[in-house]
Amino acid sequence: MKIIDVHVNIGSDYTNAYTAKDAIRSMDANRIDYAVISPLLACPLPFGVKSTMEQNDEIARALAEHPDRFVRGLGTVNPRHGKAAIPEVERIFNELNLHGLMFHTDKTGLSLDNPTTIKFLEAIPEGTPAVVLAHTSLFSVLESPFMLGKLARRFPHITFINGTSMHDTTHSNCSRDLSAQYKNVYLDTACVHYIMHPITKALAEVDEDQIVFGTDYPYYTIAYDKMIVDDADISEEIRRKIYYGNAKRIFNL
Image 1 (cartoon, rainbow, N blue to C red):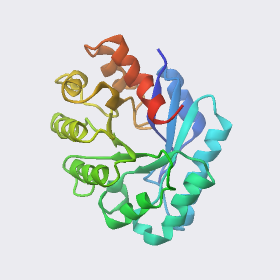
Image 2 (cartoon, helix red, strand yellow):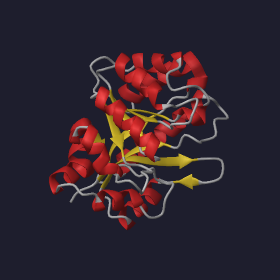
Image 3 (cartoon, one colour):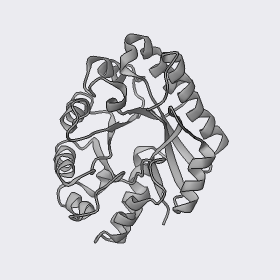
Image 4 (cartoon, rainbow, N blue to C red):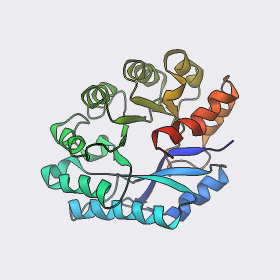
């Protein structure tokens, strides 16, 4: 069964570098065929927007060098950079030919629904089938799930992936309710909790077309998320959608 991992980060943080080749080695070890790649958001930003541009350039370069493994790329912009970062949104789509944006606002210091993030989403070129991977965390004051709901309601034409959407049982409950309300919000399986049957519970409330597979590389050695999906009491048809079909559709592969 083919697998697309929609939640793979490459780049550098303050202590380590995680290269495209490192990601591919991990994918091979865990029998994952393809990935959608994003920058590492805990990255140093000594030169502000210029540093972010370098992260996005690395994503575009990895896509060009490994088209057989990396099928789509997402760029990022930092809300703390304000209006100065809006031209980078346009460059992400028009010059780098990336397919969307990724936010992890616990790392960047402003709330997911802050006015600058809204300006970024408004700057996505009209008619572009954009995907936005937005991390949420139930007890965060910066990326609580309800904030993603506000964005989904305001931008119904954008597809949102709720990153690490099932981190614990209560977070799962909130995320399921969010996707039940907004058909443009997808659950990813990254960092999914191991108890209480998270996948089958999700499918009791959420359409089977609204769940995609993700791992949150590089923060694992063994992809336990894959084991959870493999062991879920679901049909092979639904498993195929989670692993491959849903991502193939939303990323227009």
